[in-house]
Image 1 (spheres, rainbow, N blue to C red):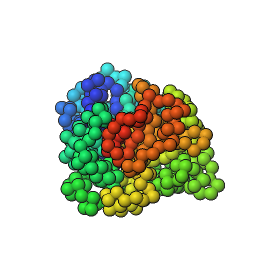
Image 2: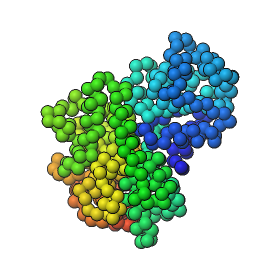
Image 3: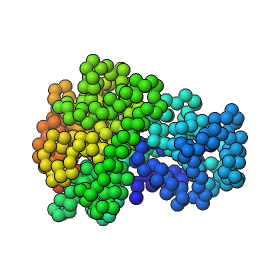
Image 4: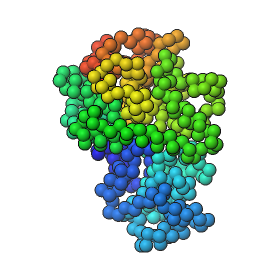
Length: 432
């Protein structure tokens, strides 16, 4: 399947691939598939080592010898001299070996033109808990997320439709009514299926019919996520706390305040006891964290209020699955309690897939805007509505208080630009 991250990989290659590339991302987002596709297509020679299965490679790098000797032994292991200038080496599940990540400093500084890619489903967690010297400044970092809605359209054979969405977003021209309704239907299908490549492949192979979609795929991914929580932890208690946070996210998103509250996990819970567990989840890519800002300024990170944040699941399909929402409820556009929650989580995922950090605004009263986006025109507030009812008193409060260049409202309504508000259909969130 076509992935945007392929262009990031090409950009790394075209810059000479002079530093090793470390790729992070949650399990099942398609890291291995796209890296293998890239390596096979763009290089004359390709070596791949999945370190979960290659204890012999891990053992070589664990030895108390210099890195050049380790490379020499790696050549002996593969049985031939390696033409490093024309060969790309991919270490998959590299979180298994801190020594290989540390060796990236050698690869970057060596006169030999090594081309190295390292990836792993829990690499982000491992990096944050590194014991050995991390090669700061000697690696390039890249994150892979679930497929966004545009990639979902590509996979569904709707590339021309995706181009039309981008055109309307840029010009604020209305989408043709029939296409608008078709895209909203596709959006609802995406809410149910999500952006995991395996899930999308099953959906497209079954004629884009949600009733034929194998929901066991999402069940198994969620179970795999829970099993991952026992890896790279400090204590067994931390594993239990990681799982407790993760399981509480769907329910907490439905809170009136939407703010994540540790006390909702268990009565008497203190945030300081769960801080490292939360860091684990965010570093793993399994949840996204959005920080609250009361008085927006650039950079937004400098204005966030510590201890006030929201959490989102990394994939809308996993959220729908966790909530047990039926296909008909979503596809028939029924009203249900979590409808707004799903829409907001979806937009959070589209923003993160585009590389945007997440922030939201709340004043000292009750006004709250879902997202803040830093642009060349200043900070733009973004309000998300799940349907066509778009009254936004909080957005008006933000506009009158902070006077943004314009505001953005994402909803089921068509494109327009009126009264300083850019109206963006839900299916066009990937354009932001």
